[in-house]
Length: 476
Image (tube, rainbow, N blue to C red; front, side, top):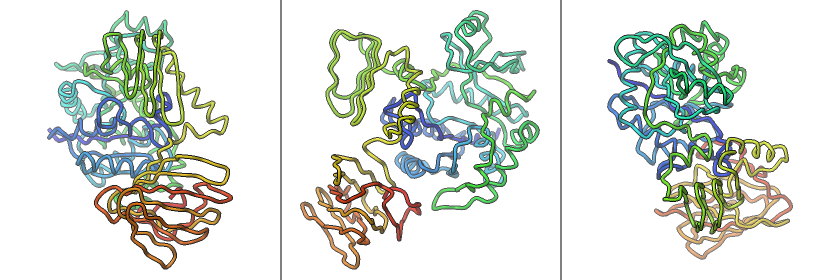
């Protein structure tokens, strides 16, 4: 039996886990269950097995450096990291993975995995993959079904049909997308229904064969986007013009519901898609009153609640069944039974043209991060942390001046033609329109306090002359 080719899809925004999950740093990049991020947990789950090849990673262009850094931190080198210029759902992503595998890797069965799922029983998961790989090599398109333990209305359902062979493999009789409560209750009572996990397996050839029949337009434009792609550092960047023309669709709708080769393998692996705060509470370790707490939290006469503090004390008294999330710029309180509707709050923020759903106070960059400390009418104070050996782009601003103070570390500062080395408690002033650059030439993280002043302090006031990371005209 050939090895398995994992494909990690990391393109979601995780709006139901706001305010921790945000567009620029979504839930899959966050450590919600363990010290590793959800993305890292997914990669490690398949990288620890000698049955799996190095993963193909497909991610949003804006998250490329965060993904690359997280892979580096766990010592995993991907087979390839593909950048999507725009999100187009799972069917185009799967088509790209199949095309890349055919051209550059092998015909090993593809294992499509969302980057943000929780699986408690890794051993049972690998046993299911063994069974799935065998079915894939026989020409089937496999989905993995989760035995429902409640009438969940947020998942799609799969009804199993006739049994195939000796294993726990069944033909798919029917897909149902997110039923109402009464229908979901009837599915549990009848039996033979499974939650659709969003995990799939098939060989590249069989997937593309079916897609050319069910959605040939998607395959055609994905081929064009790949043919016109270019290598950018360690990334394969799909052509933006071609990929933007790809129709957005899911694997379920575009392929699985329209093929006679779909089979379902029921699995008991302790699965959750961590799609809401209530689902995260369900898989988290709780105290004897049913509370999960993280950070600086004091709870008294509190029960069945999820309480997370990131920057200050959160105290509760006499409450139950709540989700309380505190971050540097947002405090959210919700009924635990209503956390599926958190996405509605994000929609309100978007409609009000606010940016709390887009980024955190701490903004990650390939060279490190910056975070806002204070905002004023004509001034702004930030903390910059630059990784050892990293440097910001050579740049200038038209409307603001900057003052850098070294708090910790060793910096090399370029201001026009002058190059200086700054140590702790030393500073430099960068006038408006001065061409400048900041580098960390030490072995430890460089910590800088930056004071900006001027008539306009937006991150788009920038011109780049050189950049190690080949970025466009975005922030720093």
